[in-house]
Amino acid sequence: MDTTTTAAYPLPADHPGVADHAYRARRAVIARVAERFRSGQPIPEVGYTPEEHEVWRVVSGELGRRHEQLACAAYREGAARLALPPDRVPQLEAVSRRLTALTGFRIEPVGGLVPTRVFYGSLADRCFLSTQYIRHHSVPFYTPEPDVVHEVIGHANTLAHPDLADLYQFAGEAARRAESAAALEFFSRVFWFSLEFGVLWEDGGLRAYGAGLLSSYAEIQLFGDAEIRPLDITAMGTTAYDITQYQPVLFAAGSFAHAVDTLSAFFAGYDDDAHARLTA
Image (tube, rainbow, N blue to C red; front, top):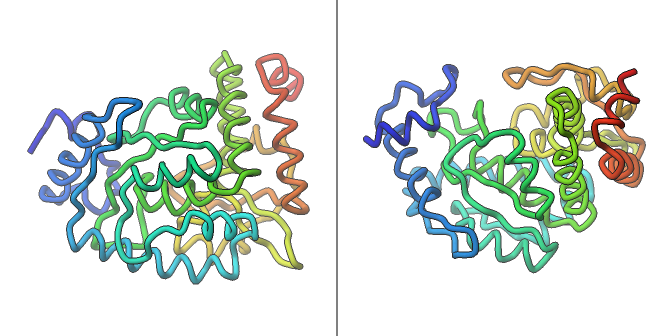
């Protein structure tokens, strides 16, 4: 096992694979693939195992059925445009090429979680930083961290829709202008309650547009049980969240256009001075 690599990307204590040495060794191998990548070059391939492909097949299929009823139309349109394979883990290079053709976004691989400013800042360059490992096979419908299912089914499908891709870029630009830790934290919370766990009203029902919901087999079925509040930037930016549990509070836009217009305006004008005004 490459202990240097595994130490660089530690597993959370509640991870199903934390005590599985074979899984951790496999994660180290996949992390090294990302570490070989150099910007401007093709993304090195990961030789996924049959077991890993099976996890993707099962989770992808179940999520797809949930999306038909619970995902917003823009997400479903993006997913249809990107056309991910249902039976195998896609290679990030193929996903990146397709995204670039659709919306100008590209993907670059990372071995694990990266600093907040690095992740958000990359979005300003229409670049999404993605992991390549997949969740533990023992619990295919759960992961306490971003994996390739979350990154590709949640985020890449979203980035295949032009309006949502633009929102991601605007968010990255806003994050770069947030110089203070407090301003970045406020921004991160707005991002969490929108592009990760955003919901909106559409066709008489509540639909998801946030990647965190769209990639969670369990939570996407239960988000209607949360306390649903109207979309409110100040409330979103000052509401704490816990990544280890289902979100008890969600903020719903009145429509897809309402979400895009409100968030675009916020991101376009956000900086430390805007943060001060919003929290005065």
